[in-house]
Amino acid sequence: MTDPVRPGLLEQIRFLHELGVDALRLPGIPVPAGNAETDTVSSLEAVRANLGECTRCALSKGRQTIVFGVGNPSARLMFIGEGPGEEEDRLGEPFVGRAGKLLDRMIAAIGLSREQVYIANIVKCRPPGNRNPREDEIAACFEFLVAQIESIQPRALVALGKVAASVLLQDPIAITHARGQMREFRGIPLMLTYHPAYLLRQYTRANRQAVYDDLRQVKALVDQAGSG
Ligand code: URA
View 1 (cartoon, rainbow, N blue to C red):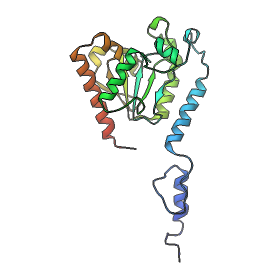
View 2 (view 1 turned 30 degrees about the vertical axis):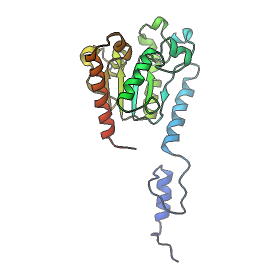
View 3 (view 1 turned 180 degrees about the horizontal axis):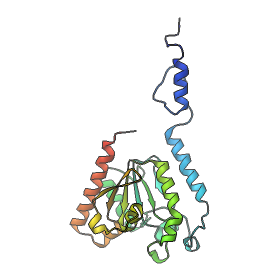
View 4 (view 1 turned 45 degrees about the vertical axis):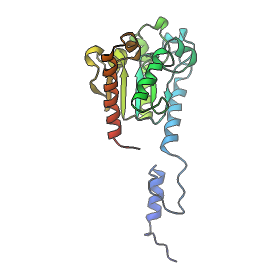
């Protein structure tokens, strides 16, 4: 039987596979070993490896653990907080304390789980006494956050609180005025909302509703962008 496939087409498809296009499948052509998911994992691992046992700023002196980030390396939605607190510093994972439990509930309220999104912070080491990170500390960490975002390629970002929003926008913002705004970070939609720790302190119905509205809006945007 003659080959039903146009001459040269198999070669063309093989070539597309090598480029990472694996939507085209023909019998007899194995799917290439690499895929977007594992590539993202390895590039995130490369970012972590580049960070190493970081001593680029003074926060390294007081930390117990570097809190790199957690979640799905191909997440469509990425949350960015300020910096690790005591629990996070001890356990090496962002948002595991009281504020973290509330963040989990905020994420669940829009039908997602901690495992489906990605969570990171502006700085990866705990500022002493949970003070705000300083400019030099933020600057030392920033390239790693950007590399994480570039590796994950989320459809949208959520800045949790004033520090994350101000750093990502390179503009000191007042979160009580700016929350609910959809801005951009390097072309990626960026929702500004309250930090869960603020919400715990000001646990009013209006504030809870506001955060819920913000997250629903960003979830709708992510869903609108389609799957894949
Ligand atoms: N607050 C943050 O901003 N990040 C954490 O990881 C925990 C608390």
